[in-house]
Structure formats: C-alpha cells, structure tokens
Amino acid sequence: TGPGAQAQPVPSSALSFKAPTDQAAAPVAGVATSPVPGSMPAPPLATAQRKEQRLPPPAEVEPPPLPAFPPPDPAGAAMAASGAKAPVASAGGTREPAEPPGRTDHPLALRFTGHDPLEVNVEVFQRLAVRLGVQAQEMFLSLPRVFEGRRFEVIGFTEAAIETVLDLRSQDFYGFYLSHIRAGEIDLVYACRGRLLEWGTHKCMAQPSLTSEPAEFRGSALLGMAHRTDQHFAFVVTPAYKNWIAPHAKAFDEVCAQFVTVPELIAAEDQYDLIWPEPRLDPVWNP
Image (cartoon, rainbow, N blue to C red; front, side, top):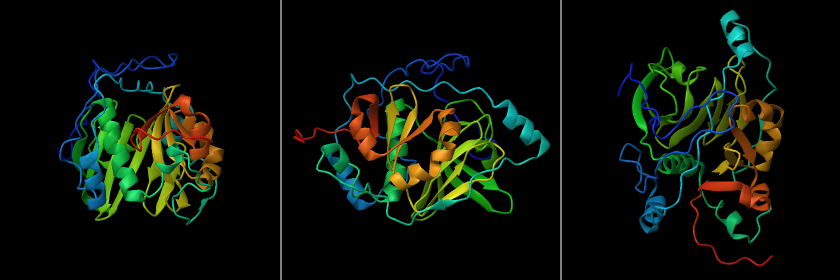
C-alpha cells in the first residue's frame, strides 16, 4: 500500500470496540501460529537462529482481549482546534543500556537480558501481530520537508484512513507501528487518541496529549511487553524510564498503556500475560 491507503483493522469478527462505559473489549477470535509474513526486515543472524529453534504457540492458547478504543479527549480536541499547546515536563533520561538492573537468577528476569533495542522493537511488534492473529500493513508515508516515502508497518485497531504520518498521530488512530528510519534504526510506536509512546534504539519519546510537545528520554528503555489482566498493554521498562514517565502515567493509563519494571512483573506474575520475550519452559526456581 502507499499514500492514501487505509490500514486494515483487526477484523470486526475478532474485535468489538465497546462504548466508553465498557471496561473490556470482546476477545479476539483465533490465534495465528505462524510468523508475520515477509514484510518484516530480516532480524540479526543470532535472532534468526533463535527463531528457527522456537515452537509456535499452542493452538489452544487464547489471544489476549484487546482494550476498548478510549473515548476522545474533549479538552485535547478543543486545544487542538485552538492551536494551543499543553505543558509537558522537561525531558530527562539516561544513557545507561536498557538492561534490568539488580538481576537475579529468577528465570523470568533472565529472559530480559542480552537483547539489543532493535531486536526488542522488532520482536515485540512481530509477536503482537501473531498473538492478535493479524498481519501488519506495509505503507510508505511522507512528512513534508522532513522525509519522503519512509517505510512503516502498521497494526491498526480502527478503520482510520492513513495518508500521511500525521494520521498516525491523530485522535482517530489506535494501534502500533514500526518506523524504518534507516538501516539499523527502527522505532516502535504505540499511539492512541493522539498520545504517543515511541521506543527508539538511542532515545525514547513520550507525548502525553494530542497538543503537548513530546518529551525525550535519552537512551533505550523498552525491555519487553505484556498484556495485563485488566486489558491494558504493559510495557516492560527500565526503572530509570519508569521514574521519568511517572508524571504522565495517568495520561497513558487512560489509553490502555501501563509501565512495569522486571522486578514488579516478577512480583505480580499472575497479573500479566507475557507477549515478548516469548514464554518458554523454564527450570523450577527455588528462591
């Protein structure tokens, strides 16, 4: 697809976007058991070798229900119409590598080590598509005076028309996408109602409202992704990032996104369905 194309949403038979008062969407029907077709870039050799050894998820495993599309933010829409900008906390961050500090020998903690940020972004996106049973839509989009024909891969949960990058940042878009910036640099973005979480290999961005300026976190921060029992997407992040994003946590909670560190994930493992790193048979751990 190219400019003017419309992202193919998750089929209506699989998803049901409920009224704002509903707490959860209907379960997605069926689970895809094969990798997303060849629109994805080839992973590094080490990753490819690991993939060859993986087994597809069991057919009887149910995919996670998708959070309902949150209602639009009236205040944000009004500010957008007026051209005003909402305040945002000053950018901070860290240049430390995206590794969970305080590692233990717990099998779950060990899954989050040894992955480079590029691998995390691509693997999370691919695995999410498999879990939801959808195929990413490939698009080549432009942003005037910035770039032309950049490759994007999009998982859209609504029928919003996508003609430019700005459509991916609008109140109407809800989903994930990969932005292929250059060789070795692919950003993963979660967008909902104009609120954005962008995970890069050298920096991360957060835009907590449709009209606010994005804030920058220096360094990579995403370690993995899970699905909470309350139907929120849970981004597994470094402690430094979680501290940095804390002032905006409520804004992202309103659009089905939460942040959890590896120790927090371990402490409440029964509340999460891990999407990536992929679940596998781990040895029994004796604390």
